[in-house]
Amino acid sequence: MERNQLHRLVALSRQPLFDQGFLDEQFLQLEELQDDANPNFVEEVVTLYYRDSARLILNIEQALERNPLDFNKLDILMHQFKGSSSSIGAKKVKAECTFFRENCRAGNGEGCIRTFQQLKKEYATLRKKLEAYFQLRLHAAPSEKSVAEEEMAGIHLKMFLVSEAL
Amino acid sequence: MEIIPFFSIILFLSSPKNPFLDHTHTHHSGKLEISFMEFGATSRKKNKMVNGNQKFRTEITALVVDDDTTNRTIHRRLLQNLGIENQEVRNGKEAIDIHSSGRNFDLILMDMDMPIMNGIEATKQLRAMGIRSTIVGVSTRSMEEKVQEFMEAGLDDYQEKPLTSAKLISILHKMNHNGSV
Image 1 (tube, chains in turn brown, red):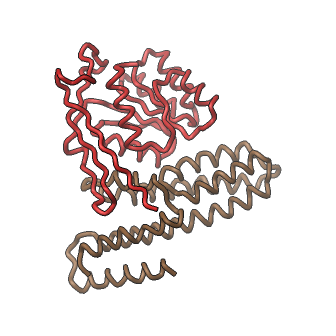
Image 2: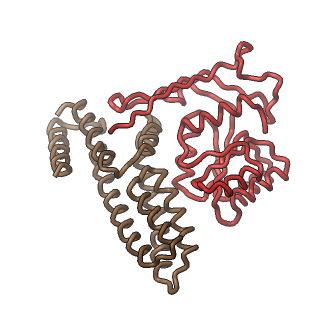
Image 3: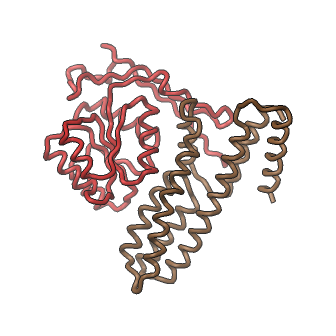
């Protein structure tokens, strides 16, 4: 597959993430900050986000095991998590954060627990999708590839696109 | 479906003809100089933005105050992209300390919610110390009262997170237009 084609397809491969509401405008803002000096800025930020938020998730989990629940504390933790989620454009994750906080304010413990389960699902799904996208991007990066390697990259890309469409 | 941001902003050369620059104003760190910069965000097809670093040089310095690593990284990259030299600290107390050590900045991006010392308290203290830098509050807080309280602590401006290049440019425009605090 031609290099240009590869690049274009890689760019297109992330379109479903926007169409399906996983990512919003903010992700585009981050992409615009990439240049020759910072070619992998988005991947770096996303990696940072998942690394840091792991601790927050753990704290929230622990707080949810308390009895009685400290809704104020939960709200504060979630406020922080929502902040960094929104700064990488994690649209669905951010939405779950909002629901969670509504449950906190209503003092609805069951609701909090349920929403948190959903949040963790969205969080994990986004991670998988972004990792796949970054991998593809890596394959498409200019390098000393043989014709065969380029062919493989093209095939992987097609397989990925097909699997995403299903 | 696709949201394609398309904006073009031009800051003028610091020449006598420049209507935006007030030459009688002396910024505390010396002359505020902004070279010619052209910003263009094109469609994702081309997906290449004119690199601000190549054409843009400025003497503006900035301090990012935020407890979240992801946010600090993004804000610093935004600043770097506009050619603004910048540093970071993790909370209000560190912001006070860095100023106590003698460092000074033209622009301070201040988060509201931080441990040890929050943005409201830090802003109050910085003003009390006589710091005249442009302090911009950056937060996800939507409640009117909190934003009001933050402004009253001594902010020059407030921007809702997440910060974008466009928001940062509007901040710089205001700085250039109004002069100091």
